Amino acid sequence: MKETFVRVKSVKRYELVAAALRSNIVSGRLQAGLVLLEGPIAGLMKTSRAPVQAALRILEEEKLIQRFSGRGYLVGRAGLSVEPVRRDIGKLGLRIPNEIDAALQNRGLWEVVYDEVESAVAACLIFGDFASSSRSSATSTESAEPSSAMCSVGCMSAAPNR
Image 1 (cartoon, rainbow, N blue to C red):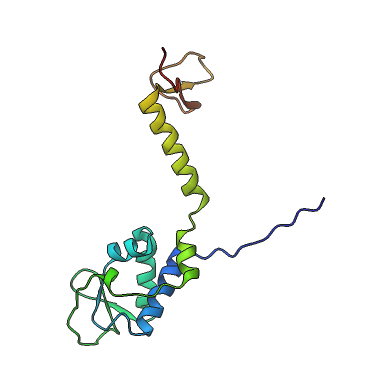
Image 2: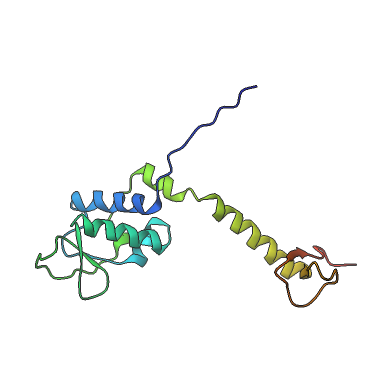
């Protein structure tokens, strides 16, 4: 039986955010002078601030936005004399193409694994005893101090004894 692998092009989150912002700037939905802040953009795009920071740097290099003496960036080219306009970006009716929105909602494998591990550890802390044991090559007994040789973490009991 022959296995078939499909390679999906991985687009970085910051590229998706930059594309969405770029299209809204070029179309005029984001007017010249509008203040762009990382936090509100990250909330709107349902991503962290790091991809937004990278996206804003790209748009600055493309001369679509500029830094200003206040917080954030202004829509418009450097040297353009406009008053900063502060508005809630979530209420501006931005258009985020379905492909970009879907890609932003698709989380990486590490995020899924992290959530599962976090949930398992939280369940151990609530419903059982959470223990960390370590073993080194010199001794086979458990110690209070973890060694660099081996460390295992586990849930001792998932259900209360009756």
